[in-house]
Image (tube, rainbow over all chains, first blue to last red; front, top):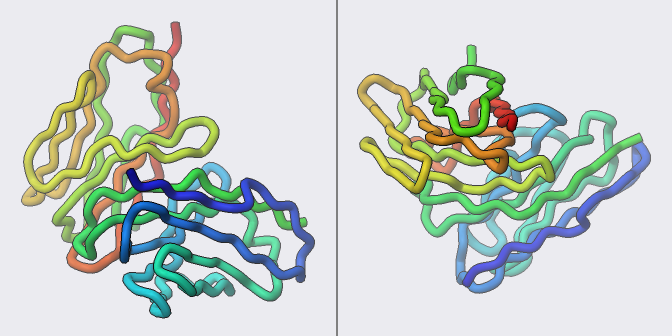
Length: 113
Length: 108
């Protein structure tokens, strides 16, 4: 069975500080991976997707970047946090590019002060 | 305007009653997914649909790509059905477009 793990569960960070969020998928080779962002009480907005190691496509520019250093790992980061980065970050995966069932991790709640 | 419009935005149900949620699309959707986000934030996939209908227990969903809408029917609502329901439209690319959600509260 496939499992998806996100870390950390929650972060409180200062404006201007760096950030790194991680996501690992186990039990599935070469998954399509996604980062989503959700403002408090808002909808989900796709940020990045990756279909293979080393390849990441940006969907929405929010002064964030993403990398896929390994087949089972997806990293979201920034060197300088903004207040507007606060929210809930979710990693997700599915098997194919034609939008099969999407499975989400449990998310990271980020508060920028 | 919103590419995926969900209605209603909020709903309160008595336990044991039935209801329907709706998504209207102004983009060309080839697939639809429905999710439930629980109070802790976890998103659970309820349905993945191509045009047609699916049923799972007390939930039933339909997707009409020609009329550009999808519905989610909840039968005999239970307290654990509470949360926010999102629909998401899938097109020919890798992007899913989410609606703003319907916040459902089931009361005893």
